Image 1 (cartoon, rainbow, N blue to C red):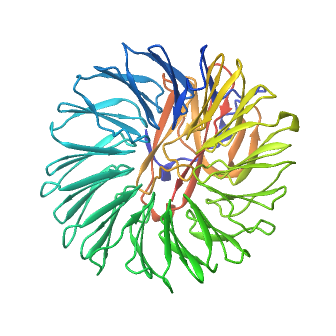
Image 2 (image 1 turned 180 degrees about the horizontal axis):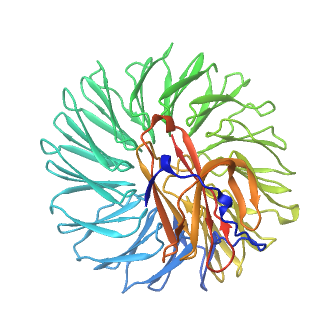
Image 3 (image 1 turned 120 degrees about the vertical axis):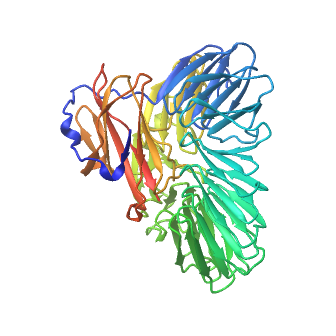
Length: 632
């Protein structure tokens, strides 16, 4: 069902007063698949999926469904893994496993079929198979095959969430996010076309058609002269004609046009921003959310660094930061600064090492480091940063909030952070602590010196750890915000962390770990790349026991838990909760709720948290983990 967020009726979470004295029984984030004779390389993983083979039988684990599923191939096959799907090509049969459904689904094809996705595309959310005049598409975000008849010689290009088909003047766009098609007709055959992450484009004469896989529609803009070039990356593509500078956003589905006197410009793009400058003083800045150009003039020639959602402009007396989410420029007086960027956050230290400032692209503001923190570039993560005094004080910085919650560690601390990841952790003799940037809070798990050393792996949103002294596995996900343990079965062999899934191999089988919440959506930013925006639709997905009644509430994520006896912890502020109509989990153990975001500028920057209450047919009721959706 599709419910406008602005029309959700308010009801009290406590209306379901079914709390039992026994502990809540939420589905485990860890799932074990028994097998013997596995080696360290027996399990492969990427994105949300881990998988292994045993002869011609394939077993796959989905972080989104928290379960293993198997498929018996009719013979030999070739496999291909992407972030959200696993494809098994057995000649005239293709099986695809989607992270969304966690099951294998097959189609029959001819021996002449081709896989459209280039082999270098390892992060695509959609799979495309071209078979004669049939185009098969499979979305790892929704599951299920669909087909469409196209011209045999039509051009097809795909990357991440977007696919476009160009057949002369006829244009088609497919969205993995929406599992939907949209069409457009150009006045003339398209001469140039392409895709990037959430968008596609086609140029016909002096007209540009742009496709948004987030909005599920085409847009069009006419220029005074044909575009001379196009540069795309992430959610932004830039075009330059002799008289115009054009940006298109795959998030908003809108063009921004700027009249420029320069005939040619060097165009630069990153995940959520675009940039051009004729002379280093006049700066043209384009954001995926703002979808319009900002013209900024620096006092001196500035060096531009374009990365993630940020453009940094460094000139000798000061530093400017542009947020592609806010469409604004903020200045901080740091002379000759040394800088670093990670997705939604930037850090800068002045030449004299007297000041450390951090920039949040979510807020569009600079923030001075807390007193006592070392004045050096800190460890950055996609969602923030980790600062320290060099001893036991550790400050987390969240680009959502812009302040610095403190964690005081025990002895012999070890930091864990990466610009490519969103998990920030500190391991010490007293605790393993992770910073939940969604709640602006540290989450701690007790740890003793006798349990160290701990084998920890982090990548993107996933932390997994092996405790040799305790015979257990531990996981923490930036998308679920909780530590969860599983007793080791068999002797430990190998451990790995991937974007949103973890895996461990033992002599008794394979473990899969879900770094996602049991209540979640396709929206990832800033923990990972996928954004949403005003006017778009996202889908909440809940997993649990089939036929179990459930309710979902929305509110504001809180740094302080509210324990509810027998149900677990409420991670939302109890002062403001709104609820959706109750439902029942479907026969596949899944339920979904599509939510439309109104095109109301007053909602820009809203950060909504969601939790569910599930009443299983067997066992006790429980609260789900926290899901959040940021609307930049």
